[in-house]
Length: 91
Image 1 (tube, rainbow, N blue to C red):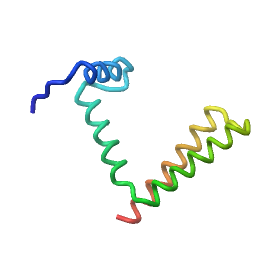
Image 2: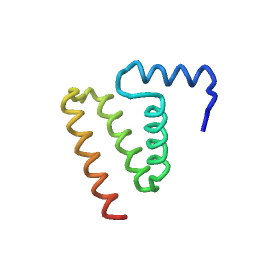
Image 3: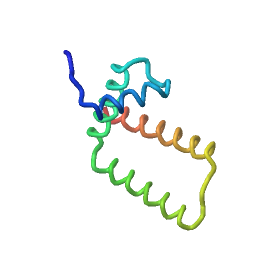
Image 4: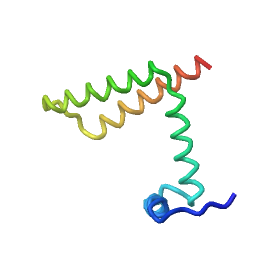
């Protein structure tokens, strides 16, 4: 399949490529589509949980209860692992 991209999408792909995190344009598109597919597969409970978590974080920031980057990364990794375990049990 050959695609012709408008300039704005080509610019976004090139921006991702310049980060060094992607091997090529196909890799950028693959990861974007995988992320979209994963998001579209969320059920209502997962969407509500994510919204609640975002709201909780916003409220904590408003109160000045921020955490540092390493702690945030640890917590996100733990949540991601828990989410994967829960999804694998349901499938």
